[in-house]
Length: 251
Image 1 (cartoon, rainbow, N blue to C red):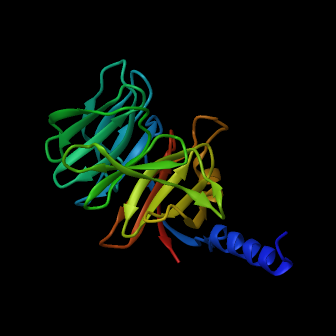
Image 2 (cartoon, rainbow, N blue to C red):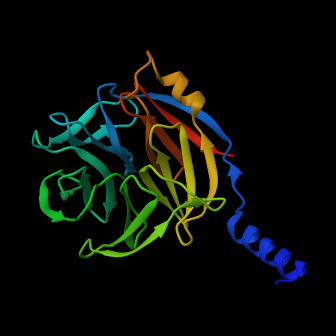
């Protein structure tokens, strides 16, 4: 029989290991910029003054370069009808675009959007980001797969938890320093994940952004799309079929 003191120590140990400090990510909304309300946003990133966006839905999927100020599509490439576009990441001068269930990633030249090659992978593709060394990929579960920059093979994975509980439905991703920011599918939440541990250390409530963007109730028009401008330290947040892109600065 274990002594009460030993049991108490074990409880404290479990509690300490499970409970992580999760801060509320307060933010200020700057500009509200135009966004194509027919774009089913799956992946979003900021590079060299422009937005790059991957769109989904069968028959409507593609990748595009977008003018930040006007929302005008400057360049675009359409995917074949049977392909469903997903996450988007930039590694060097190459854009990687995932597909949902086809097991294919398309690699484009970021300047011309010309297709360079295709890469195969197993399982579903949801979100993707690149941290300067390797890719992190979501698949709708609570796991983030770390993939090789050179081969796109899985190197390892991290399970995402909040206060000891799994956080599933991780969707669009943005790598920023030691953290990964992730949309949680069909919610107005963005979670900040410590990429080394998988612990959620911060959470942004995007409810007021969502309410300001939706012109009419639409179950498809969920918050999805995170881009970061390191030069100005601001995020750009939007959603599927949203007519607006918000410029957001974390406090």
